[in-house]
Image (cartoon, rainbow, N blue to C red; front, top):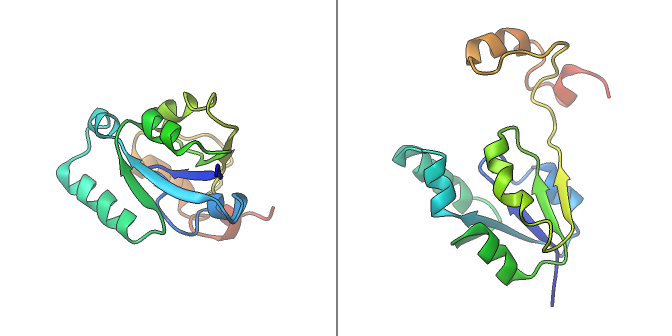
Length: 142
């Protein structure tokens, strides 16, 4: 029986992510431990251990293998994917559009900024974001 699939990635590792509310209740949650992708991200061993320990706390299955092959084997009726800020994270997922309808679910904003900021340096970003960070709806009314 085909059913919807929630695919988590490294930027969306929490049980309260809006993707869980957006997907149908019968959806199966999964994280694909894709060695090639993780190596391309150049994560340290410490970061990989953190990812694994975080995943063990979540209501998701961890499947190891090539992302496309794993998802194809699961034969989802629809794919629900959290949005990501890093384009390298979504690149492998975009190739899955041919397998099933792909729904990209936005997260609650951490902070809302009035002007774009150079996010390559955390301190520059934080000086602009600290007043609204961690506030409901990024510190602004909807």
